Image (cartoon, rainbow, N blue to C red):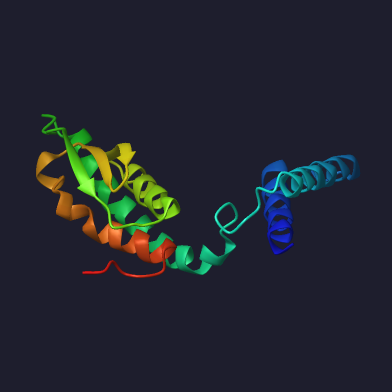
Length: 162
């Protein structure tokens, strides 16, 4: 029941934030669509701890400011590369090993890499990610260790066993 209530609150906030129209007819239609969506999700039994990870919100809230800082630093690097007269990028592919255990943690790690300008996660297989990077010298697999560790802590809730 908690997951259904969380879904109702999340969908309501999302709908109200995106809609911008608050006439009685649209509010009624929005409420009906939210209720139907929540009822269908409950009936299909797809609301569980992994599908609705509300328990992760506090740790994700701590992870996001760090990720935004990394995105800003990477943006500065990519902007400098774009503004130079000679494009000095040296693209490469690198395999990165992850210590994340859950699929959710691996997805957070892969998406964090992709959100960071200059890097894109191309493939995820078990505990390996294939990453395309603009600069070979900055694409050392060890340079992703901090992000991997933080992703694991945010989702799995613990550090990797050494």
